[in-house]
Structure formats: structure tokens, C-alpha cells
Length: 485
Ligand SMILES: Cc1cc2nc3c(=O)[nH]c(=O)nc-3n(C[C@H](O)[C@H](O)[C@H](O)COP(=O)(O)OP(=O)(O)OC[C@H]3O[C@@H](n4cnc5c(N)ncnc54)[C@H](O)[C@@H]3O)c2cc1C
Image 1 (cartoon, helix red, strand yellow):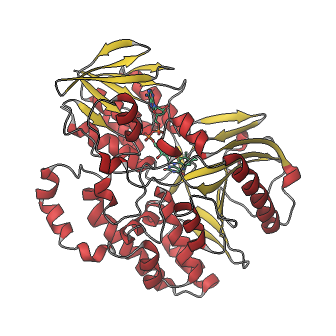
Image 2 (cartoon, rainbow, N blue to C red):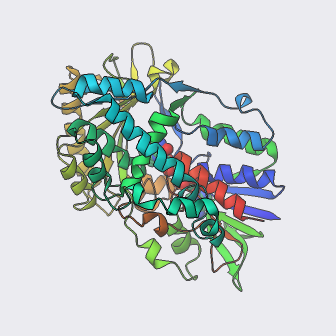
Image 3 (cartoon, helix red, strand yellow):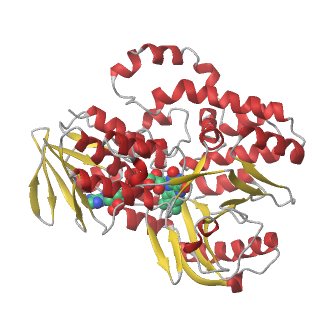
């Protein structure tokens, strides 16, 4: 059985390893020169940057790929658990260094916000319960196979559905269960982990903070791009064939069966195709003559990002590995993103500084700042103008908060806007996580991991079930590989 995988994003790497472990003959075709897609890295002068993801959760999904291949993960890939999840800063001067240990976090929150620690621990218990009951159905299996719905644990979980906050927004659920405005904003923020709007996304997504505060946050030795690099090494050792700089131009379908792919005008025969390309482009660009699932393809896209990579001539004790500087009006901010398709005048700013843990990422006494603001998906906005405006605001706000003019400290700079993300990773509209989850039925409106119409056609990655972000993209690869015989 020969399988051709289109793209080498994190989901594709996981799928390739799983299929090879099943004894299949696997070839990966990647348009870029390196594996990892959005998970890539680069150097700017003497600074090293991870270009995409900066937060690593659920590392056991990565470890599992080494163990199913019969290897010791530690021979390929190492990571450390962080005691601190994130530092949060508000404009009224409040701040919390959020521990990834729920008990410590709750007692710090009680001291800072006068919110009872027991109530916060109860909140964590509540979201943990939702996670434990729902993850296996909504995240770890295909939602498009009868076997998922007929199993006894699914029926048991469905009988509890009213407890999942499915019919409230995340914000509404957080307001009811927590109420303290700083903490509500802190927990609402987790909607951005799948590019959604907490005022619309269903409350069941309040399980996301449990990944961070229950399972913990981690940092890969050597930086985030070590994740795809080590998986690529493993896949190569197992005999997966990689073809870099080879953009797939067409999927060849005859009589309802996949027959091959076209690369550089040449036909390559194959029994199965797995597309890790954004599902929108898979249909529009690679199979334009096949009937497309228009309802799914027309769903609202997730948010994108505007990222400033700055080499900073200085270092700051106030900041940690992950830092959030909140804007004042969160509702307005998400209205700007999803309704006006713009970036608010007062955006929340995320700053990641990997050189705090990986000193080689910056010269001594200097830091590598990955500064990200949530941005709308690319609809042809004037990104040059928006970038200029946001850059000014970000420098002003960070300078105020850190008590030092950071403008003159920027000695290296690169900028990635939504149109650049769309072009470099071939993601439709530069959306980071495929479709948004701004709908209580969003989980059912993601594309299945297989095609109902085309025999031999499969999908993996952030734009299909169960969604984006490293852990879910890896789970999509797992579901896809399990469906293939
Ligand atoms: C700035 C940014 C910050 C993020 N932060 C986080 C974070 O902190 N934590 C987290 O978990 N997630 C984060 N994400 C999201 C995460 O990166 C993605 O959800 C995940 O990496 C998607 O992986 P994927 O497998 O879908 O493939 P992608 O990374 O989208 O890769 C797809 C690959 O397919 C290739 N390809 C596409 N079409 C073709 C073709 N026709 N022929 C050949 N090759 C093709 C592309 O070149 C690309 O390499 C972030 C993303 C970005 C951009």
C-alpha cells in the first residue's frame, strides 16, 4: 500500500509515522524546503526565533509517536515542564504570574483579586470533568463514523451534555462561574487558542485552560521547532520518503477513486492520498473538478496573527517565557477581529521570550521577543497600514508597562502578517486554526478526516477534525491513521 501525504505540517509528520508503523509505504511531498509548516524557525542576526507556535502542551501526544515506533523518545526529543504558565498584566496595574499548579494559582489569585481559592479550584474541577467526559468523543475519534456514536462511553457522555456549558458562550460561563473581571478576562483568553471569540464560542471550550493548568505547560529543549525536526528524524529513520520543495499541483481522481498526484507536471501513482494542505485549498486548487462540501468550506475562519520578531538590546526581569498584556475592552477587541475584520486600537499583546529558557537564542544581555497580536483572517485588508499603526501602539504600551522606551532597543526586526502566513503555509486567509469555533456546533462543521465521495482520500491537520493547535493537529493525524487500512 503506497500513501502520498501532501505537506509536512505537524499533523502530517504524525500521520506518516503512524502509517509507516503499520507497514505502509509512505512518501511526503512538501512545498517548502523544511518540515513543520507553521512550526518553523529562523535566525535574525545573532537571534534565533520560532516563527509560529510558542506554547507546548500535551507532550505525551509527541512521545506516543516515538513509542509506537519502538523508540525511546528521549533519544530524539527532550522537554522541561514549566512551573509558571504565563505572566498576565492589566492596565490597572494588577498582575499575576500564573502557576501551572492549580492550587498555587488559586491561592495567588485569592491574594491578588480577593477571589476565594476554593471557588477557583471548583472551577478547575468543573472544566476537568468536562474534559474527562468529552475529550474521547469530541477530540480523539472521528465524529463522522457511526461506531463513535454507538459506543457506551459516548452514550454515557451524551447523557451529561447539559453539564458541558454547550449552550452558554465561554464568556457567559466564566461570568457565571467566576465573575471577578480580571479572572474572567484571563479565562476568556483561552478562546484564542483555537482562534475564536469568547463571546460566541461555546462554554465547553473552557476545557482549554485545563490543558495548561492540569496537564501543564512545557518547553522543548532547543525550541519549538525541535518538535517537527525530531519527528522528521524519526520518520526518516523509519523509512518515510520526504520530497522537499515539491508542491503538489493536483490530486488525480478517476471513477471516484484516488489514482495519484501531480507534482511538477509528473504523475505519481498512489493508492491513498492524505492532504495536510488546508482543506479549502485542497478542494479548490488540487481537486477543482470534484464536488466540494460548500457548507464546511464557507464557515467563518479562525483568527490569524500579526507577529513582530524583535531582537532586543536589553533584558527585562518583569517578563517570563509567556506574557500577556491585556487590552482594556475585550469585547470591543473581539468585535474588531470578527465583525470589523480589523485589529482594535487597544489590542491585547502576547510576548514570548524563548531566550529566558534557551540562552543561546540571543546574545548575552539581549532577548529575542516574539510579539503577537490577534489579527482577523486575511480578507485583502491594507496590512501595511494596519501593521504600522499596531507597531506604534504595541511599542507605546509595552514601554509604558515596562517603564522603558523599547523602540530604540529593537535592533533586529521581521514581521509576519496574515497575508504572509497565508502565502508561506498555504493556509486559506492565513487562519491559524482552520475554521473558528464561534458556533456551538462548530465541532460538527469541521471537515471529516476522510472523504465520503472519493475512495482513498484522507485529510489531517488544523483545518479538519478535531481542529488546530499542536495537540489537536496531532490527534487529527491519529484519527486519520486509524481510519486507514
Ligand atoms: C503565529 C502562530 C502562532 C501559533 N501559536 C500556537 C501555539 O502557541 N500553540 C499551538 O499549539 N499552536 C499554535 N499555532 C497553531 C499551529 O501552528 C497549527 O495549528 C499547526 O501547526 C497546524 O499544523 P498542520 O499539520 O495543520 O500543518 P501546517 O503547519 O499548516 O502545514 C501545512 C504544510 O503543508 C504544506 N503544503 C500545503 N499545500 C501543499 C501542496 N500543495 N504541496 C506540498 N506541500 C503543501 C505547507 O507548505 C505546510 O508546510 C500557531 C500558529 C501560528 C502561525
